[in-house]
Length: 187
Length: 181
Image (cartoon, rainbow over all chains, first blue to last red):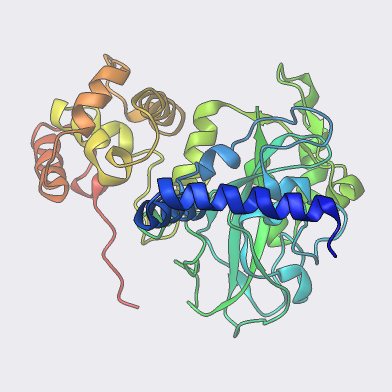
């Protein structure tokens, strides 16, 4: 014998589903639920301005940055991908390859050309311009591969694209690692 | 100073450059100077001065190839001491805005006008004509929307300037010969 509330619950559900079955056609149910499923899955795909996310607004409130990278960045260990200057660095970190965050390892030479991006320093909330300068002349270093994407544009905007091997003008076009030198402070 | 720091740090001669830079009266400038909160710059006391907006636009869009001082490797045309010659003729003045990396840049007309004026005065003031009129945003807006064959226009402008005696030598605006890798 079922408890009384379970029978009442069963009856209510039965009544509701019978009413729905009489009033709503199967096609209408399918089309409506399908529409909701499409809408729910398409919502995250709507265009989102990445430039606005990476914009150089100073820290709004304590610890709040316009950039996701800066929220998790640190200023003490240049051998980690989340070191603040690497927000747009794509490649092997020179700091892991015998060089520093802005110096090339021995046996390689800094490319005379580079691309310039901007990163937020998580400690003062200010935006600094960073020159992503590849070190060239030896095979790929292969250590500490990092992929920062802030401000990165498709390769039809080559001056702000980090997939390019920036060894133009260097004695060798062979890429070894990526450095991130400070260019200046943005007001 | 930041430009010098960048290249100096890359060359590994950071300490000497810093000593010199800090010895200079950087602090006397009107713009505030701040320490960079960073493991390396805390050690060496690196300070940077804020950049003007046009300097920033230049750094983000041009400097990577054309160099922080407007001079780079042989493959990249030199800006410093050269671009002012173009402003000596109306066609050349248009060419400076219609050259693809200026015309098609994502920056606004206002930013492009400010950048080009800053660039001309900063890196090529000596070559500017005496009556140079700075670019306005509306002039830039009209020019950059016009489609032209920039290579042919450049040749025309250089020939005209050369014939009018506006260039010290025909090689003053010569383009680098392309190098095959």
